[in-house]
Amino acid sequence: MHITRTTAAATLAAALIASATACGGGSSTDGSGNGSPKELTYWASNQGASLEADKATLTPELEKFEKQTGIKVKLEVIPWSDLLNRILAAATSGQGPDVLNIGNTWSASLQATGALRPFDAKAFDAIGGKDRFVSSALGATGAEGKDPAAVPLYSLAYGLYYNKKMFADAGIANPPATWDELVADGKKLTKGGKYGLAVEGGNLSENVHHAFVFGKQHGADFFDASGKPTFTTPEAVTAVKQYIDFIAKDKITAPGNAEYAANQSVADFATGKAAMLLWQAAGSSLKSHGMKPEDYGVAQVPFQTAGASGDTAVNSMVAGINLAVFKKTDNVDGALKFVKFMTSDDEQKLLNGTYGSLPPVKAAQSDPAFATPDLKVLADALANSAAPLPQVANESQFETAVGTAMKDLFADAAAGKPVTTESVKAALEKAQQQMPAS
Image (cartoon, rainbow, N blue to C red; front, side, top):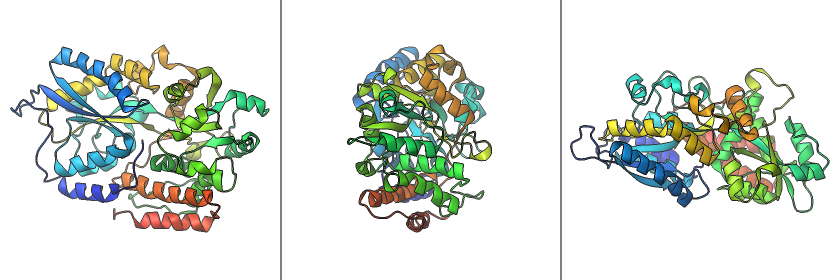
């Protein structure tokens, strides 16, 4: 999930105020307003190599749905750089799609706007039942104690991808299990214009995802129990600095990665410019860049210490895409039929198989097609060592503020400016001051 450093926080604040009184609704009704739609509008997120690739994947499935139900689906695939702001604008105006994909980390934030239709017991019954979904994926669908704002569609987790030949050439027998080992290996691999690890310092969401994981490993949560931001604790500062230090101190990442976004790190890994990559279900993206599955391995993301256990034994956020129904749709029944179709066992197998992600539907995930070595690693992380990002109303502002602070710190590191505990704390203090009152 990728969000821009534009006015997401301000737009969300406006949406919180305006969504309660906004009028209008989904654009796909027969005019009756009685839940008998002839057409639905669907905003899909960019999951494949391009927007056109997603259209090619989804269009036959939408035509299949139309044959089954008589409901035509108007598709728009929206890049991650635009998706959140498009959704927030729709929340403010009340004019939006009927069904939409959202990054699962945004669930609580969008839930707070009132723009999404809650999935209560009746809604879950309409799509086949809540117990069809993997519990970890349901944990990233909204604030605790409230009906989910969406349902899981594609599940993802982070893995450590490594180039087998580059490891062998450097005399490294096994992937690193701790960050100290990763840095040591990265230094052996950084030579001849090639680097040990690729990152995307210009990608705000990637920055926050890694800050969250490092934070959990150091005992930081970034929000307290009341939802108040705690970005400047020693643990949070240590976590962020450790990630920035891949460029600043360890020098195992190319300085140019400070500006990377939009899968540029994946391209570097696939073309042999970097030997390691931390990524969510990268298989389909690597294939699109010409890298063969036998050329790379996938291991668990490292921990601070070998054999970590307890609350600090987290090495991935619960990543993925959720499917939501816009609150103002006039076509609730049709929208729920579409959600049921997209989360059916057959569609889950087909779509997640295409995108290289894991089905969050239990029956589909158990299919042998998802038992490949790389997906088994990611499934194990989701089941045993992943945690959802804070399910708080200000989560999307957290991504923007802290993600931008880290982007700026990466820029300093790339320019040769010192990145110290004090400078990291100051950047996080500035980010915390940008957060709206809880």
